[in-house]
Image 1 (cartoon, chains in turn blue, green, yellow):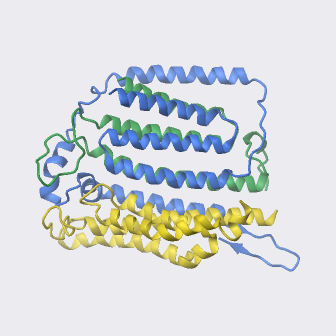
Image 2 (spheres, rainbow over the protein chains, first blue to last red; image 1 turned 30 degrees about the vertical axis):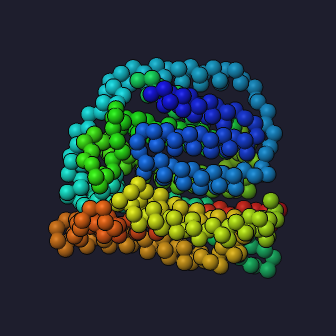
Image 3 (cartoon, each protein chain N blue to C red; image 1 turned 135 degrees about the horizontal axis):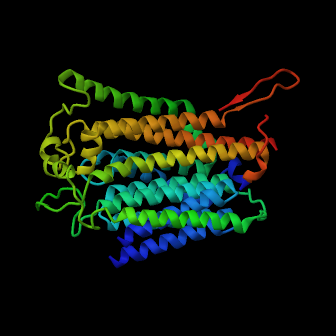
Length: 181
Length: 112
Length: 150
């Protein structure tokens, strides 16, 4: 379990670097490092499906982020009342951590899950569906409604991006309206 | 137990970044960090000591697999997170095109 | 970076892209078609297929990539993936309930096992891949308009 602790501490350090650095490109690169370490942690926790998906999705997110932040650095200065705002936020976060620690005592011990529903899926997955990969049989046979919902959410996101990005030209002198999407 | 606490610390770093930063791109980085922490928490719950990944093998019979249900849930959550990021970046680029800045304290007028 | 929108990247990048983009596409198809035997599945496979087209667009500029996969074809594939997934689900109504697994189970560890799971993987990967490529094309075209106007 020591390797999991070390990797999680590395992720926390990477996240702190990602939010404190002034340069936007360095912050995005640190975010990429956090995502790659997360993929390794998924592999150590015996979840290969999730690790592959996290790796490729994070690469695509990095490409989109770098596309948006190139050549767009602007100098920032801290406004007044910085100390008051930061201390209030830190107080809230300490309260959140304390309440979260109290709630996390009720969870079962790490490494011994209850698995009341998943026992059925693991025992009867192969005879009833015929698929060797239990996770694939869960998302496409036992819980196919959730996959349908996810397909709808992705469709809505694509329509949303196209609607935000569409540029409707203003009317010029010769009354020409151009639309690009 | 300490693993859950470290995961919660990662989530609170993301929340701090969303609340306190003034740059829109930094806020989006905070959203992404919070989402990594939530996915990690799901997979941490699903681990069984000495377990194996939930895929059958052709020559042995595996009796102790890790929990397969949260892994299925996290799989869809990761792809939805990517769509979320893309939509936020689209809105941020539109704001930059209109106001020529990424600073959220200078985006005050609701006209136009 | 402004040269990227015009003619693409340097010669080394273009040569390596020409050699490897077909392999990336083939790897994506492998992961999505063996989703019920080895780890992977429709989501990861679809994202890898979208990444191969994004790689082409990043290395060669947007004109070459859009000639390979125009915007109308992309939206067509995305809608076709969603309709295919829904029709596979509705076909379950013929012999039972919604999303019934009605094809034969086959022997485990072969490619044609698992009922409707491989078909659903193909439909999901079409939708996810085409959708993510459409998002990327829309964001790139916006940036190009921004830099051209000002």
